[in-house]
Image 1 (tube, rainbow, N blue to C red):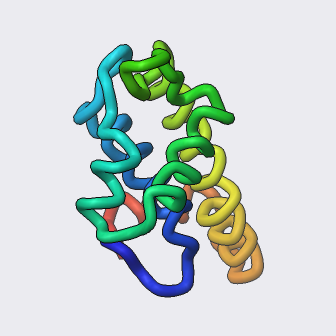
Image 2 (tube, rainbow, N blue to C red):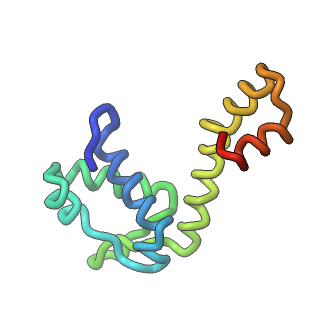
Amino acid sequence: MIEEGKPIFVQIAEQIEDDIIDGVYPAETQVPSTNEFAAFYRINPATAGKGVNLLVDEGVLYKKRGIGMFVSTGAREQLVAKRREAFRDEYLRPLLAEAAKLGIDPSQLAQMIQRKE
């Protein structure tokens, strides 16, 4: 899972996000502790904690004192909305811009997508 070029704590946060979106961690369920992430990925617990805290800061996770971290109600919907916006910005806008340069109108583009050209 750990890949070069991206901070490990960001990768931890993204893996938790993926698991929430995929339904591995539904709302109000506990996620693994920072020590469990650290042991599994063989990283420093502080690094794992930094990734978890990113999601706490975004309201995706919350802490139950003395128990651990839990998925917030509505977290999946929040993450899907965030990812859709990122998808639009990173993929769709450049695609539409390039299509316009090539004279491909939206209906032609839709046909190309449907045919998987």
